[in-house]
Every structure is written in C-alpha cells, then in structure tokens.
Image (cartoon, rainbow, N blue to C red; front, top):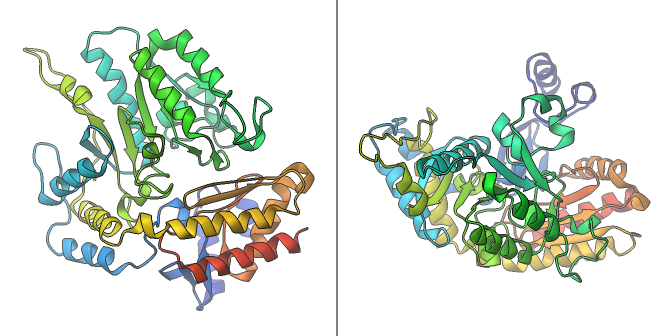
Length: 439
C-alpha cells in the first residue's frame, strides 16, 4: 500500500518548499493520522512531531474539544459570508480575541492564511494614510530575511533570497534593516552581552524614510523562516518608541509566534508593547484548519468610516474569511488555551528544552544555542558542519522517529505546547543521537 501511495504522490502532487528531484527519490513519510505529539505513518510507524506540523499545532493533534467543535459546527452552518451579514461564531471569536490581545487591539479583520493577513495589513496601512489625506506614505520598512508570506505584497516586505529571488522584478519596494541575528551578530557582539547595537540600522532607516513610510512590519522576537533567529526584547521596545516619535504604524507579525509559543499569549507582551496592528494565524485554530486575522485599534478602524460623501470602505476580502467552522474551532482553541492553562503549564518544558539543547551544544565549537519559550535552536557554525550536517541530522532523526526540518544551519525544535516531560525527553534523546551519529 505504501509503495502505491508513493507512486501516486509522485505522479500528481506538487509539494511546497520541496526540491522535486531529491524528493522523488526519497521514501518520504505518508501520515494517515495523528494524536497528541505523534504522527502515524501508513503502516503504523509513529513519529514525534518536532515542529508542530509547520509551527501551528500548539495544542497537539486530535484534541477532543477542537475536533468536537468542528463536528458540531459543521452540522449547523458550514459557510456564511461576512460581507453585509454576520454569524454568531465570528462574533464570539472576535470578542475573545479582543479580550486576550494586548492593549487596544479591539477590532478583528478575518483572513484565510498568514499571507492573506499580511496583505490585508499592508493595504490597511496604506489606505489609513490616504483616509487621513496624508500623501506619500506608501512604503514599508522591514527586516532583512524577514518572512511574512508568499503572496507578492507579503514577499515585498519579507524577502528571502532562497525562496523569492525569481520574483524580484514584480515586488513592491521595501526598505530592509539589518537582521538582529544574534547567532551571527552583524555588529560582532555576543548574544546577551550587548547594548542591542543592531538596532542602529533600523533607526537610521526610520529617521531617513519616515515621511514616505506607511508602516514598519517585523516578526516579534523570532525571525522564523530566516533560521529561527531569536533577538532581544529591547529591540522591539526601541522600535515602538521610534514609531511613536515619528508617527509610524507598527505591524507585529505574530502568525508563527502567537498563542503561547514564546511563553506569553503573544510575543509582543514579552517586550511590554502594543503594536498598531497584529497579524495572527497558525495556532489561532490550534493548527487544525486555515484561518488568520488582522487585529487593529480604534484609531485605525475609525478612519475607514464614511466621511460625508466620501466612501472609505476597505475593498478587500476573502471568500472564506470568518468561516463558521474555522471561527468555532478558533473559539474552542482559545478556550482550551485558557481552561487548560496551556502557557503556564508549558513553562517547565521550556526550561527542560533550553537545558537539554545547551548540554547538546557543549561539544560543538562555535555553534550558538538560543531559546524563546517553546522554541529552541542550535545554529551550527561552519566548523561544526553547518547546513550539510543539519540536513544529515534531520535524516538520522527521522530514521529514529523524530520529524524535524532544519533551516540552513539551524537545527530547531518547536514542539506542541502540550508535550509531556517524558515525550520531550524522547524527542531530545533522538536529537542527541542524531548529533552524535553525524559528528
């Protein structure tokens, strides 16, 4: 059966972020079910899910309350547009989000996935200034190697050379500040022992281009696709202060790091700041169905009201935004985060993860270990094998029952927040053996 599935897959299915030739020659996993932190292949072999199935299954697979919410809502209302009408699930979810979001992020604009939330936030920012009759505010400042999705607007502010180089002629221009890459500091400093000198590049760009800038967009505290680059909270605090000084909108892309991943409900809370807009997704539904949203303040929302004869409608939308099934699922997920005290209960696992990764990296020469909540990364230096060794480590881990996906030289774990002590021990033991086997 498994061989037949491999043949049918190779014949018809195009896999994202996957090199075709190498993949066609591989005996890749085919998953038929999942439960908790485990993925089960066709044939019954189980794999530990080391990356929460692309950073989203925060509450583990097959959580009964989430599955139940899908079944219950699917039997009542499968779809209803939000253009000119509403439904109870979308309303209830918006209320919950407004309650848990930091500060005055009280309005919710639903989208379908991370890229579409980014697109909406960028367009909202530009139209906001148009609504205020402020001319020329049409550009964005972001971070080098930042990632905000794969649609063209999102790529414009989140350009990753390896992913997007073929589309450069089509991209709207964005100004990019140097990445606060603590494992390979652009200022030559040591992580945790600096004065956040890396912020200087961002400050210079803001002071130079603020009159033509609509907004700043960053992934708070962790640049995911760049290689799990974890950076200091102080960087965000300085950015907020500078945005206030020059009256700039700050967009926090919490799509990957929101919903408990960093040890707070949202990463911005760790830095004690409130953005003007916040994009969310992935863990919003516990990772079970696609859904995203933009959260924003009254200050922005109210500029879209009609002004006499002037229409300021935001002409942007998605067929399935705020779908009743995904809305009900997300509402149930938020209740689980709260009722099961997921964030506080994951704190011991965060310490366990950090301690184990630091022990694992001790024999390495120049590699860097960084952690943030339930994110842990070892960035391998060239002396320790770099990207080539990271690839071999992933292959060895898969053989032993752990699924991970390194990003260049970054070997990382991003497990479900519900993982137990013994399950995390198993995951770390396999990773340790993979490091030893590839030394």
